[in-house]
Amino acid sequence: MSTHKTEELAHRLHSGVSNGFGPKTPFLIGVAGGTASGKSTVCKRIMEKLGQDDIEHSQRRVVCISQDSFYRPLNAEESSRALKGLFNFDHPDAFDNELILKTLQQILEGKICKIPNYDFVTNSRLESTTTVYPADVVLFEGILMFYQPEIRTHFHMKLFVDSDADTRLARRVMRDTRERARNLEHVLNQYTNLVKPAFEEFCLPTKKFADVIIPRGAENTVAIDLIVQHIRDILRPGQALEEEQNQQNKRTRHNSDNFFKRPH
Ligand SMILES: Nc1ncnc2c1ncn2[C@@H]1O[C@H](COP(=O)(O)OP(=O)(O)O)[C@@H](O)[C@H]1O
Ligand SMILES: Nc1ccn([C@@H]2O[C@H](COP(=O)(O)O)[C@@H](O)[C@H]2O)c(=O)n1
Image 1 (spheres, rainbow, N blue to C red):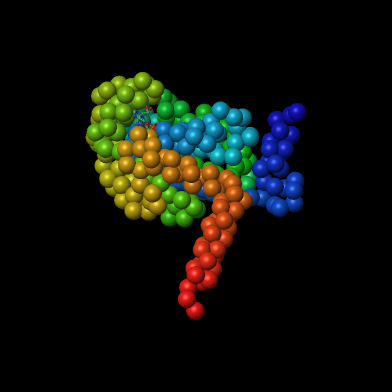
Image 2 (cartoon, helix red, strand yellow):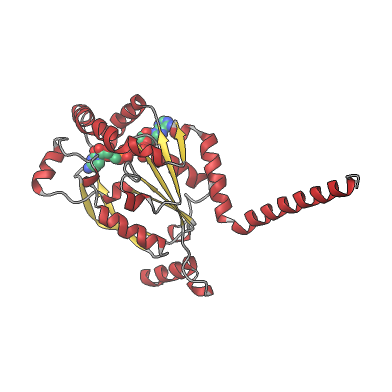
């Protein structure tokens, strides 16, 4: 089958076009928190617990997108500063916010979308893109997911991953030196001069918008299990409804039993 046909079929299956119910609106979960707080790891754990991590992308009912994919292209001068750790990637203007909004719109309309692939070594977008298929639940994680009201208002549930600052810095040093081709001096200078002040100015104040705060990130299995259970209820609305109906029936039975026991 051609890629186009596979995409078309996946779209029809997910959007409900084939059964006449029209496109489904997915449940959109925003996940914010400081750098290296564990946002991606929390999302990964959620996907694993729901058995969504090791199945074919077009078949997934839960998908995850990262704000990192939406860093905007830099001009020559910005690019040269970025290589020295002097460009502020933690400022809201570092992102292609228009593309984030357009993507959110497509997701909410149950459409297939293409997400840019980002290279942290060259600080630039790659030619290739990743296809995101319509799903029932979409996790969208990033440091400034809750900063812009236009973006924030789209989320049906907002999570904030709250990890200790020293832990985050230690993790960031390890990650950036291993995976992002940075040296220690670069990471520490960027962190002290740009990342930390921007976290305090733009990211931390958005914690108040969260519905659920996850202390210690992925270590917090209790919080993750509660969120997973909530997503399961969304994925099985019939069952959740049935359970609610059973509870209601039990309450009605209990009340009428008591009514007959009462002296009249
Ligand atoms: N609970 C944890 N224990 C140990 N290492 C962790 C934990 N959570 C995340 N990490 C590691 O810390 C780094 C940053 O985590 P990540 O989930 O990518 O954070 P974020 O998405 O918030 O930047 C990664 O290398 C990850 O493997
Ligand atoms: N070219 C880039 C782009 C971003 N960063 C840093 O990444 C952090 C956000 O990603 P997390 O996975 O850590 O949430 C952000 O703090 C930027 O400083 C970068 O270093 N280089």
